[in-house]
Length: 310
Image 1 (cartoon, rainbow, N blue to C red):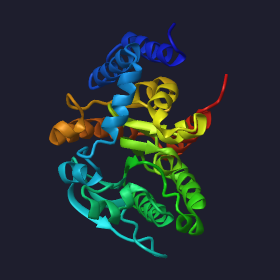
Image 2: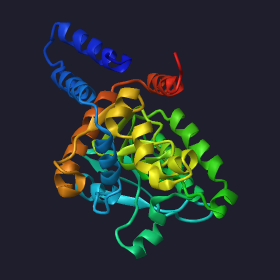
Image 3: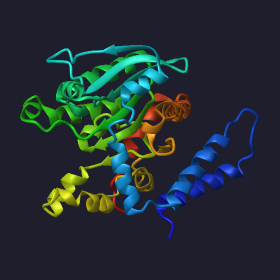
Image 4: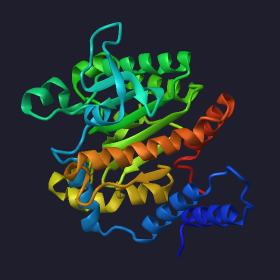
């Protein structure tokens, strides 16, 4: 039986195809995007494929934020510090040129070797990281720069120091600020999108996921430890709550899936960056003509509707 989301996509396809095309109106891209999303929903992943997505999302060679910055942005200027306590290396923020337009970009950075991973805390942000991200959000809003967020975090850092520094409040304030921005916002889960650490920087007008990324309220291991008191049952947990991109799209948590090279993003970072860049450009073009008040109204309505049982 077709899901409500599939029926909604089919209805949009039908209405678009019935329009009389005017000169200069670009609908073919939207039609193709909707058809691709339908195709993915109709071929639901198996439990083995879901776990494969978990493994690929965590692959040690998967491109991180700075890998995409290097390939997609010109004139990159990184900003540091929260102007209060410290500079959290787990969250990278800055300004750069993307296809000729200045954008503000933030994203998680996990690190490649043990030394860098320790420095970057495996991408798990402290409150200082979210305060640094909020600095960038305010800067983008002041200067009318679109905001792009690349999400790749197992979860916000759960240590005692992070809690003492106001972890929960920082996450909440970051979400509240994103909901009020007047500029277009696009988020993409490029690896792990874990719990509150992810949603803190993903309350965007368009939320995308790379094909082999995962977006979860809890890690499969954490879920398994709670339900079966055994983290080794992570594969069983992932099959139950389905954190993969296809099921997130079907659930309505995300707005689109970004394709990856065959075998995963790590097999061809250049091609992966090209595909991500195309999806980001398409999303920004779609949002740039929308008035600020409409952006905020739609953004808030979208996130308030998530999780509503009907």
